Length: 470
Image 1 (cartoon, one colour):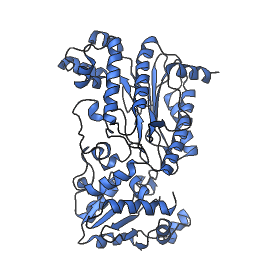
Image 2: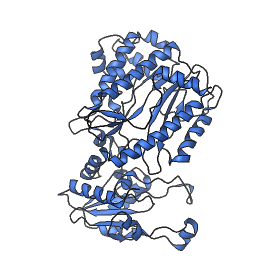
Image 3: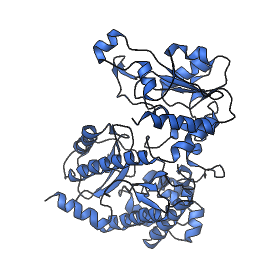
Image 4: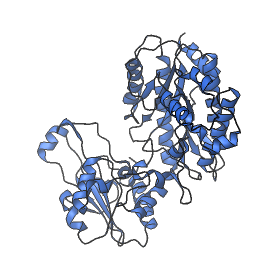
């Protein structure tokens, strides 16, 4: 938690961006979420927008900001003696309000009365308990309080969402320090994982070792760890397989600091310690794409254009390997890269590993004059905006050989005759490769976040794995 002047300034900036709006802005913090039963909850995590504006990392709180008068109110109930017996002494609601510069407090149950007759601006909610609470307060269906599409939530306040996104997209220096710390923790986490790769070892042992680093030194992982020898499956969370020789292991994992800032790295390792010639060819292409993207990141450049440049380089290299044929620009325009990289090049990152996507992907990741492509791959690009200093985003190209997708394109002729399916058949058991770094847009370019970069060039990876075994 930062000093109270930080949260006062953020709320003031939000109010300034909402000048001329009528009514009241309502913010609902998270509550404990029961797992098997009421007193056995899932691990506590506060809502990130709440943390950004109010900083109080405690459950069952709400707040309002009157957009016409600027009056702020924190709603909550003091703990009872029974609560204190179980949890120990805790700050009063008054003390919590003072800690973040809020003058007025009221009981949690007083929110409804305060909203009567007022226009209410609210943010889309992802947690179901918050959706239920919003629905009850505002007379809505719970499904109307969340984002049901990438474009956003029709019932939520577009002015409030846009105002908050404009603030959170540009990270403050104090936030960048926290993200650097998360990346340092992520570096240690991934280094531990790489050193644990041994033939015959069960994947879960590696996951346990790397996640232990984040639990010992931070809040934990910033998202469920992806560690798999089936890298063609993007979100494979199954970890029961033994490490097999000759495979590629994709490790996509991030750390979250105790003050809730995230990292997100991906590396791909040859399980035997050295790449086969076929693996090295594809790996080299993904590595070059990662480097190309980083070299293009600077203020004023649309990340959509960076994605397209990466797609062109990828297809050019795959053409030289005999997997595709034809004019590269034409293949890019027709979306052929989506067969090999069906995801976007990157996303925003901050307190959430996919920062603010609960507020609507397009509102967060697209400028007003941009629209999503219907193409596979490009259509999944989560960050397309023109870059500004202070933006934090991921650079994560990949190449995947997905048998079901390849089969569909072949049956339906979606490639226009430009894919060499005979040669591609030899890659049906290849898997996938993804390489991901976290990047800060600076005043004159970009820098990778964290004090040290994980080994990434193919020779560096092989040498690191050789040293791990000494």
